[in-house]
Length: 135
Image (cartoon, rainbow, N blue to C red):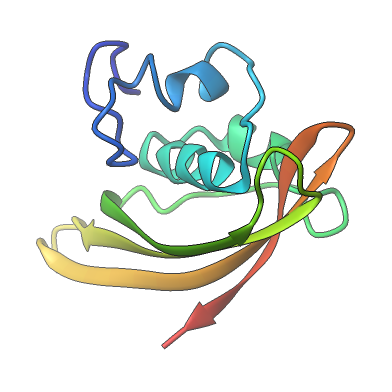
């Protein structure tokens, strides 16, 4: 878990408390699809499975979520957004999330996840629907 005054894992440049911490820890709702994407990345980086499940649309949400403890998320690059603003009901965010495997056999092996994620806003709350992984 990030400390309140540490830089946020999402790479915004803000502190965790002023950025994703307000959604993961303080219960505020992300105002845009991109803000939800960033906070979900931070949820993966900090292994906050409760938050990830709570922000996943019920139609696609798994019953449980088991994160790979050997995967350390290192950086998030937002490539583009389409809609997903405070007045929209849908949006997409294309991103690349960089990680490193740290399992003792492949220490330092780097990888990346390139995805275009779909979001919907229901009852004023943004939710992750699904994502298409790009090669």
